[in-house]
Length: 111
Image 1 (cartoon, rainbow, N blue to C red):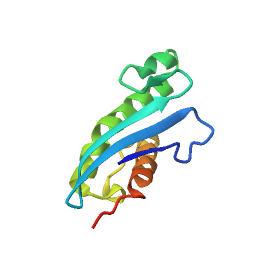
Image 2 (cartoon, rainbow, N blue to C red; image 1 turned 60 degrees about the horizontal axis):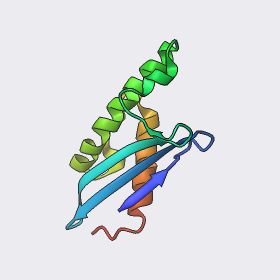
Image 3 (tube, rainbow, N blue to C red; image 1 turned 90 degrees about the vertical axis):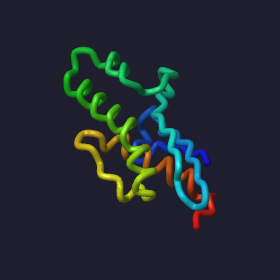
Image 4 (cartoon, helix red, strand yellow; image 1 turned 180 degrees about the vertical axis):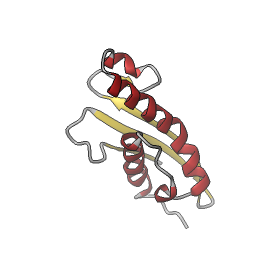
């Protein structure tokens, strides 16, 4: 299942995008990324280059990159996005994943 969302960040140019694989009613794989639709690139460990000189945004990028890498595995373990603990400083990436997952699963028939 595929899903995408801007979550609550409707004025931003970023989208959460997710591919969820479900087998026998269980989430077995989550591929999550954040897309910058203005710069036409995927948010990654190098994205902080856009904020050179702004230490606060650089730290925010680092925290959210950790979230992008960590949250999918936590979701597979917990099977419920509401049971995934949010990493301090990485709420943005969590929200983008959460609402992307909800979009992907709204048509899934999970037992």
